[in-house]
Image (cartoon, rainbow, N blue to C red; front, side, top):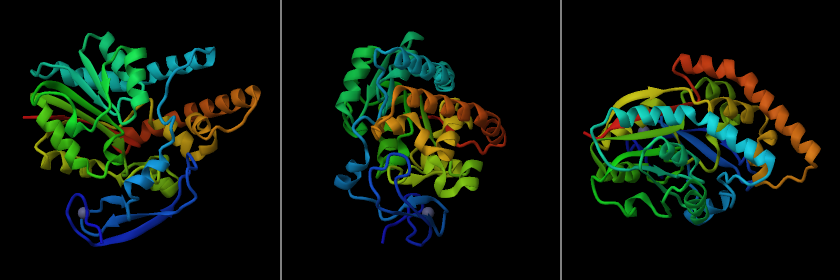
Length: 314
Ligand SMILES: [Zn+2]
């Protein structure tokens, strides 16, 4: 019997069964349960590491190619990353800490490239050696492939650490928060972003909500869950943001039509003619645009489908 990450309770109730809706890496069903004491949602039982690895496709992160469509996709990704860039920039400008910004789970490094161009010293960390290599080559962002606990940085040497969509994938999110606390200089800032299990999208769509991402998400946090974790690892919460132009509208579009999700089609290597590809991309983009008003409304009511939290290391 597994215990709750947050409160240690073994009491839990089944919520629903779900499979890999997005990438179809397996037909197996997984159980999502709710802690009987604090209400944190989790996958239970968790797949073992050698099994979980099979549910991460090789090309899980985005790497821009040289074609016109690919360059257009990268321009779009730069544009929709502006919420992340502005949020982190404001966090770092208000901090007295000096040192580089480390992005944990940096993928191809697009975010780091944008921060570097704004004058910040940057570094990246990723599970994938191929992703780290791309971050280096295409974004001139030095990146290493390591666990945060073993990252090659001195204690208290970093001004900022970002973890976008990382905590929900980890067996032990506490270990990463503790490692971040150790690496940050006093007054350094940690910015975490996770899907929000307290969102309208989750209440409306349940197991069909893209933010569950079964079986890759081992935990499904609400704002209060993340903040409890942060506080218990020695951080102080400074600021929250419930809207992300990159994640919230696209998340709703992918919940409604997972088979149109461009990343899922790429990962699943769906055979399609260039005309079909263009048509699907355009329909998906129209769905993303149509999702904007709803996602703006849920975010305005503090029930956005993602939450970005700035926390200070005292
Ligand atoms: Zn609990």
